[in-house]
Each structure stands twice: as C-alpha cells, then as structure tokens.
Image 1 (spheres, rainbow, N blue to C red):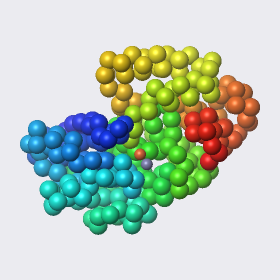
Image 2: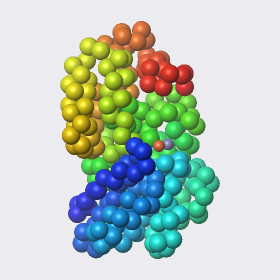
Image 3: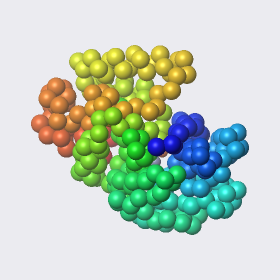
Length: 255
Ligand code: ZN
Ligand code: FE
C-alpha cells in the first residue's frame, strides 16, 4: 500500500485525516470539520482532492465539506445513506455496510456502526481504521441516535479486527478518557501507565493518534466489558450493564 496518512488538527479538538497517494498526488480527506487546515495541507503538498469521506453527519466532522467541494468540484462526497439527509450539501456516494470505495488502488471498506448517529461508519484502509465518534482513545462516543445494545454490538464487531489495527479517532480526548477509565478500573496498571505516558505526550505535543487495537483492548474499558475486575468494580455481571455504568462515569447520564 502506497498511502500516507496525515493527521490534521481542526476546530477545538477534532481530527481530520488526509490519505495521500504519492504516485498520483491525489488525496482523500476524512471528516473535514473545517476546510482551512485541509486546504492548507493540500496546497503545501500540491495535492488534488478526489474524495471527501464522512464518518457521520455532525458539523464538527463535516463543516468544511461545502467549501472543499467548491474548490475541488471533481471530489466525491461519501456518507452513509442514513446520515446523508442531514448534510447541507448533496452527496455523491451513499454508503452502506460492506461497501468498498477505491482510492489509489486501495479498497476502503465501510463498516456501519449505528448509534452515535444512525449512519455512523468507520473506514477501514488496510491496517488503519478511522473510527469517528464511535471509538475514541480509551473511550466511546455518545449514544445520540441509538441504544446501548447497538453500541455493544458495534464494540463487539470492532474487537474482532486484527490487533495490529491502527485506530485513528475523531477527537483528542485521550487524557480525560483515561482519567475516567482509571476511575472505573483503578487497579488496572495498563490504564495508569497509559495515563502517565499520555500526559507526557500531551505536554510535549507528541501525537496521541493513532492508537492500536491491542492497546485499546488493554486500556479502553469499553472494549473490556466482560473483564472480571472491571465488572467487580462496577458491581455488574454482564456486558450491557457494564457499558451502561461506564457511560454514567464518562458522561454523567444514563444512555
Ligand atoms: Zn459526532
Ligand atoms: Fe464529533
């Protein structure tokens, strides 16, 4: 695979990502919450934009779409069919689970994960996975348009991907999420270690994305719902109740 991935910080704490095909100078952008940083990166590297890929319809992930489409009218906007109507711009590809988009001779696979929004998707590009607001570093997105049961099956599905999968999430919440994770699972040394390391990384401006699935399996409580120690801490005995009580710790409300 000849794709390079560039991480862009947009808005307050969002991440947008550029997939770059160096052999053709084509780029695809994932979740352009604002257009400015994307245009700047494209100009810096002399790239043309061929695809605008959206994990979901929220403004902080799609706010730059209209401006980008104006500048790059040939670019194709892709979003899941269930989120397409929320977009203020017409989209070119309505996505469904299992669809493949071809970019730079590489297949980008669509994984439909309904819950944060009805049409939330993850994009799988080789060993990279772009998870939007479904899976964060050490956390999980809010259930705005779905149930805990739906999120549980999303999480179970993501857990089956190869452990070496690199996770590129939609927001920088690593340190605060690890603080909640530590609160939920105080005796888990992997969480404490990652919290310390992440605070240092943040203070020195070192990148906190991508994570890996293997690191998340050790330190993200939302991927450890059947862990005995975690269930003991939360006084639960099944994955759904564990998910619900984690949500309360992270978000202060029941889902
Ligand atoms: Zn969102
Ligand atoms: Fe978001």
